[in-house]
Length: 119
Ligand SMILES: [Zn+2]
Image 1: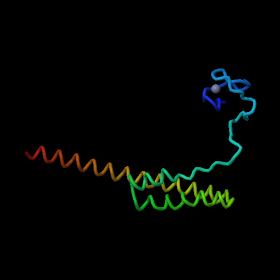
Image 2: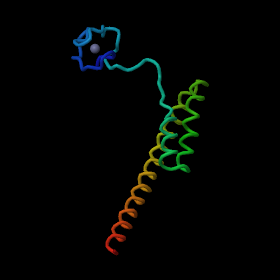
Image 3: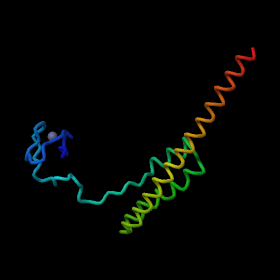
Image 4: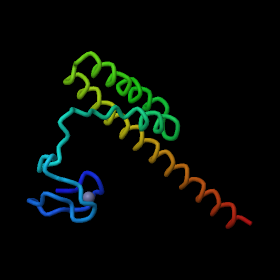
């Protein structure tokens, strides 16, 4: 397990952190938070939309926006589902953006090479 306060690694059965002295008795051994936290991927969605691929980033933003409203409505399963879809679209947009940038880079290099050899 890891100390929740300073993040240093602890032996499994210690009651106090060796480093900062934080009492570890109150924390479960697995370190799992009791409250359900669902990432909404909104920041990532906006970033991939702006930096990578606008048409593929839009569904990511739409799903990301659904996560918080579903959590507020108490629909944990729906929120998890939207979170997964937002993550998936983030990766798709990121992958496409990366591919497009790589292709652009290759063409730029090819153009530069062709231009310099033609001189
Ligand atoms: Zn500590």
